Length: 301
Length: 279
Image 1 (cartoon, rainbow over the protein chains, first blue to last red):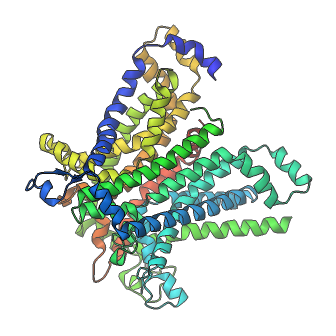
Image 2: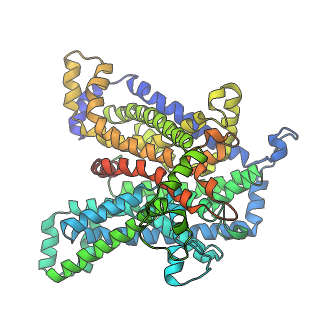
Image 3: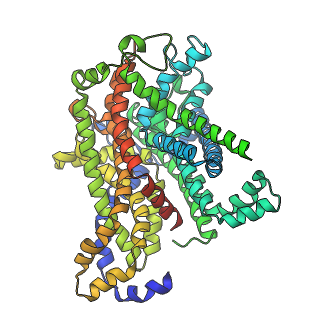
């Protein structure tokens, strides 16, 4: 690629790329970079209702918000819940997505079309309506699930773990299609002869999966895993809608929802911003890991 | 061998049915008459379908207005974000300049930023902008258009890059040798060729804007006539008794457009993702 493009590109020096990038830069500068800076700034300020309405001057408090946060036992419990929830969702999404991707390669045409259409449909459903449908399916009295299982009057949202489990199921339902479709495309790209050779040599499907498909799909898997981590760490709508903003006594809060509640429900904007910064740092670490994996696998940017 | 295949086929159909079932249940509940919705013995079919719930949703609760708002926001976002992304993608694939890799990495990082964390500063930013430019302050659709254009942009650029790169360089070279200006090359040559990719990318932008719950919830505080669909949906949740018929009808109305879009560009979507992933 470089050999082909190097010559013409040399002739195109000048300011053209700058002009082309200008609209995107302006938009992202105002609505990404500036708010990022403001987020950091807010997190070191005493900024609450009184300061918003101008009743009191804003005060620089240094690391106070962070100290409050780290000293708050709820922070640690919410952080643990967020990591555990995201990890469970990622593992389940990958297992289901990868399993179905392999399944897709071994079935007839019609079932394959049916499965991929169904997955696409689940992918397309908006998070809000997906959440409401599952709430209806698992409703205490009118829900199909309780009626079929004979769980009269059982409320899935009262218990912390069943509530997280239900939200997790919706998240997996929404996100496995991406994994399935991407990995299926990757598997299809592996030369048939390699798979046939392995199976002639007597390798079972389990061995073929781990010894041939997984190594061949490594770059793709890295992307899928990191994307899933990022998405599932940031789940907001499903939790907010299904647990009504964090569950009973905040038992289903994750960092994301908690930051939002601190800021907009309790008017603790400084504290909310500090939680946001912590989250950003965690995700940044994941992103850097992603870039390193990409570079290691020799993908040019 | 044949039996295994049959079994796997059956398994796949089973999974497909289970996957699609919630969507079926949503549409079914939307057309069930009120008596059947309230039933303690839900049946997986209905013999007396009615459009009652849809009528209730569209007339009594002014849902049509929210639908229109959502469409408006999504369309503006698709056009604005698509345009910016197209120009940026051309810059990043057709030119080699210093900092190119840095810009690319920045786009990638933008994708990873937890948008939810930015709601707090964005809330104040939008409030302050609103004080000088009335069209894009709090409680306006403009504020939603603005933030979604920004938040769909990084992914759109990342994905479009693959499509622009797929257009052979020789094509715009030849046009330029024939005396076409840069602008002509951009609009008459590259744009039509990238248009299919742009369509696939637009679906993503459309869906992001259409599905957004967070910013609608944060920015549209008091002006109910500027509400978008996801927020309006929650109106039917009542502390004493949820109006499930209306909730499901509203959910169906919200899902159908996205579903149609998604299935229409299914193939291109996968190709685009492949491009975004491989490049």
